[in-house]
Length: 158
Image (tube, rainbow, N blue to C red; front, top):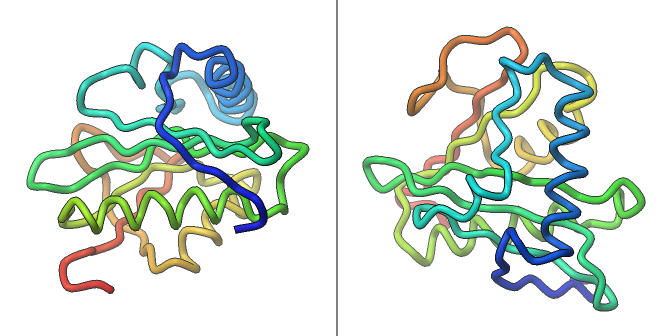
């Protein structure tokens, strides 16, 4: 995995907090406030959230989280790769790790919300490449022209 190390982390750890701030700032610059669904550090600390950092050469360059949903599903949250590490495979490595973890835990499926603008095209393409398909809003989300909702059914998936 190109020297990547993925491990559980606390969102309050300094490296995690720095990535979360970068992520929130980027999301705020790309979507209206009412359409930003990124969790801050306190939201990522919840007992229903598993938060991870991806490090390369000891430096945190990406993060991702899984949030438990009803019915045994999970929501992919806070996927972010530092701008200087984009294209390195870190985002794909984190996504594959989270999908593997969800499968190991017997999750029924994975949902996510991402942006609908061209700024988010690379993310949507990554999700599609691993089998995600567009779906309707889920678990409290509403229709939003700034959002794309996606789902990957893990029941029976290998």
